[in-house]
Each structure stands twice: as C-alpha cells, then as structure tokens.
Amino acid sequence: VKAVDGVSFSIGKREIVGLVGESGCGKTTVGRAMINILHHVAPDVEIDGRILYHFEDEVVDFAKLSSRETRKYRSRVQMIFQDPYASLNPRMTVSQIVEEPLKLHTDMSEPDRRNHVIDLLGKVGLQAVHTERFPHEFSGGQRQRVGIARALATNPDLIICDEPVSALDVSIQAQVINLMMDIQEEFDVSFLFIAHDLSVVEHISDSIAVMYLGNLMEFGPSDQVYHHPKHPYSKALLSAVPIPDPSQKNRERIVLKGDVPTPINKPSGCSFRTRCPIAQAKCADDVPELETHDPDHWVACPIVKKTNEVK
Image 1: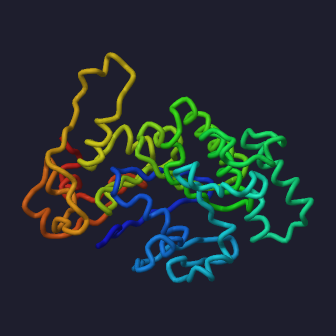
Image 2: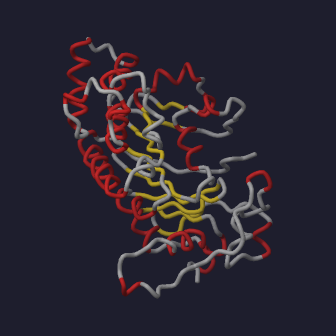
Image 3: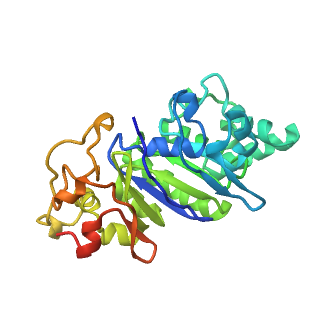
C-alpha cells in the first residue's frame, strides 16, 4: 500500500504551510515522516524519497536516518499532536512534561530549566501556579497549550502541527490559532499546519498544499489556492466551505460523485479521475506531475494546464 506517493513541497524559514485534504488522504503520514516517527507506529513502513532539512550549518536527509540518529536533530524539529488528551503523560506534572525535552537535548542546569519552563508556560497563557498540576486537571485547550510549550522548549526550526485544534471547541480554536501565529512571529519558527478545516488553514497559512488519496493535487500561495483554485479537487473542496454571508447562499456547490477509492486498489493514472468532473480517457494513462501555472503555484493536472481553468 502506498499511503503517500510523489508528495513534494518546501517550507521556508518563518513560513506556515497548510496541508489539507479529506480524512485518510495521507496528511498525518506526511507529518510523521517529516519528523521520522513513522517506524514507531508502523514498523514495516518504507520511505522511498528524501526529507531534506536545510539547517544553517548542514543539510540532513531524515529519510536516511535511523531513530537513534534522528535524536541528534530532534530538538530542531518538533510536533504538536492532534489529541491533547492522549499526547500528554498522565503521570507527569506540566513542569515535568515541558522540561523533558530540555533534559534530553540541552545541557541547561536544573534551575535554568525550571525558569525556562515557567517562561514558556507564561508565553502560552498558563501561570506558574499550573506547573505542578497534572494533565487531567486542565481543559482540552489548556492541554494543547502545554503541548505547544513542550514543542517550543528546544527552540526548534520547524514545528509540525497535526490537526492541533480539531479536538477543541470552536470558541477555543480561535484562541489557540492566534497563539500559534503570535509564537511564529516571536520565535521565528516554521509550521506545517495539518488540518481539514479549510477556513482555519486559510487564516493561518502562507501557502497551502492539497492532498487526495496520497497524492499532492495543488500547492501554492494561500490567497491563490483559496480564492483561485485550479485543480478540480481543490475547487470541489473549497466549494464545501461554509461562508457566513447570506449573499453567498446560492453560490455554486461542486458535488463529487462516488466514493474515495481505497489506497489498496488505487485507480491507474490520476488518483482523482474516477470522481473528476473534467476527466478524460488519457487521465488513466499516467500519474500527473506537478506543473507550474503561476509563480509558486503548482497543479497536478494536464487538463487544467491546457485550459488554464476548471469550469
């Protein structure tokens, strides 16, 4: 089974890239591969490709590193997990949770670590009195703030956010999103923001990557992808986003036919062709490659390349 096939994109310094798509399309697999923890959840998985990090002092291919070799770089690439209830050790206090990466990846003294933990918790909106409490004493939003503080502890270059707000109430989601945007400015950190809520992704991201059944359909600047999508799947996905504007109630809605195929038996050629409203016979021949349309805007569809629009 190819959970992810031919996915290629880049994340610049201080850039936020949103990765969107339906459940099961491979978003989380991409995120876990980028931090090299796939072997912990799927021991038999194989990565055939490159995961390059251009650090200031060296270029590293995570795809060629073992779990032990990855530890050297773990402080530079961190992850915020989807479930704030399962991603924190229930037997550890908040201070121990945030302090753990400092013990593993820095030579800070214990007093310095404790002060740094209090400072980090303050930056994510938690007080010093919270440090000796356990995760079960916090709400979901507060737990996710602890997860953010833990990810920031080693001052990483990149943080991979795996649907960090999907398990939270809508009222709390906005607070966490705004917090992450503030942190991005303060810490000069890059984010890969994985989500299925397109309105959230459009709000926070500089660029957007759209996935379908393990393949990358479209990648480009957030404004272009959101307001001028070119791939038929991107158009269908965005047409389903609710718009709180009564004047838009009669806007066109693209309803795709059929169901998403199984990754075990993917269609030949373009993986989207069985549901695509503009599919042609040649779409079954070859897997389409990403091609440039506008500056920094890439689309995997030769038909769109020919007509330059999808009706």
